[in-house]
Image (cartoon, rainbow, N blue to C red; front, side, top):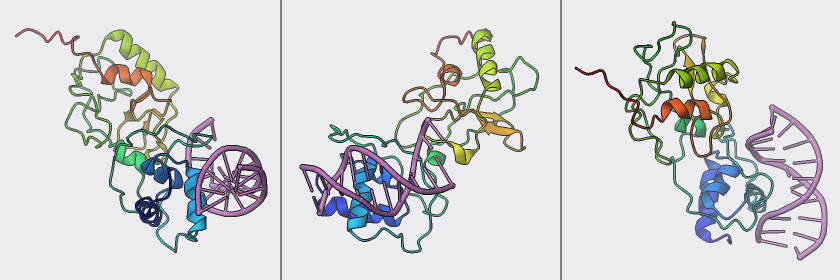
Length: 210
DNA sequence: CCCTGATTCGC
DNA sequence: GCGAATCAGG
């Protein structure tokens, strides 16, 4: 990949917007963040002219990925305000609240209800599961989840990255709220345990007859 | 560990 | 000019 006018253009724009080098690299595709940084310096715009310092965002592209066969980089969001923009935030909309209803046979301990139980904001990029049947979770799965939640990393919204589980735990209205934070399952927004409860096959829906 | 940008330096 | 390797830091 070479620095065509268009690519440089994008680079300049994104850099000005406060996007991180890795984000820009990902957007452009075919280049590493190092390449981006190098270019930025060569262009002499290293110092983001007193612009709003957007908090760095997650992105993977450290080590080496030179001749990355590159792939059609999805185009998630359209650069948020450089002020407090945060990629993960865009991808991890706090799911709607919902009181532990029939879903949690357990006490009102920490019973998050499936985030996707409603038309949550779906990131433009990777789609979320179509129909998260939601509510009935097998006892084993539930137990597993509760177990995992005990070792959750308790991350705050700002601490989430593309590879941390974004399952919310607790009540958003209180301090007793955090995100799981364990390593996500490849391509999913949640860790293995939470993917399990979020992406119910579609069966297990032995709806009570009526 | 994850990530950030800055620099160096062989190509 | 380019960017991987490396450095320094959060």
